[in-house]
Image 1 (cartoon, one colour):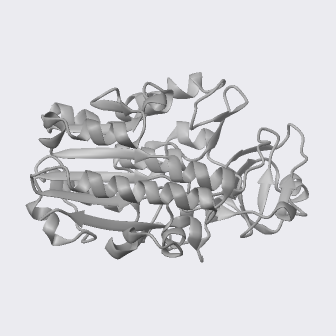
Image 2: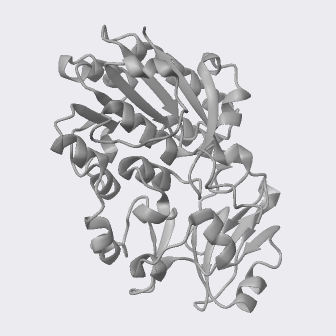
Length: 361
């Protein structure tokens, strides 16, 4: 099956497990990957920066100085969605293990499709399930093992449902803008940390609203490049910084946007380019008959998501997945925003993410 190799390639889960090994090999042992430069072994502080939306191919087409420090690329999660990627980093597990399988999820017990990034109305039963209560975040493990660490995210996201689910309110610091982030990083306690994680969303926001390679997107990329330079030069300790992304972004022409018509027999969730579906095959094929792309059966999906015996996961695991053709997008009933840039699919622009390594020693 042509997607079988997707999960076998180095990905975000591979990366976070290798980083954790270097943070503390007694607490996080048994990694066998060799993604990172051996200089990391000497690091006193390790920083991981997730630049939302900074795809490998997007970055290569720019004139950013960050290109000089790209060591390789890896795959993001499937689907190529922010909440799926962030959960993978927070739990150091594949999506099929941590349970966040897409941008929108379907709760069969309440017959509700809900946003699994914002966890809006309809997610209450889902969040209270033991599956998520029992997930052990790496942030819990840092605290338990007295590993000095902080995670930095925009102040507007602190104490959000997703933030609390991933970071368990452990060592979270909100920042207002890039200047504020640099100021916070100058704190002596932060400089002494063994590990810091930074989530930076602005490049993705510009890509969604204005498109990749727009002047607004380029401006945000330049701001991020300057931020990285400042953060890399703050500490006098041996500091190793890894920069990657959660996905890349593709621009979708207006003429390639497809609004779906369907009734309550069909449940459509997931992402707009990797569309999860519950329903009968004949009904599903009728809904998608005019949309360019490929319909995957449950067996096909298992090559991308993996298999599970967990009863709860099976309840919202899709019957089908429709992979929308490159440069096309679908609009289900619950989504109307007309953006320029999108992600969620399996094109190389979306799934390839950069591995950038910078050290001050």
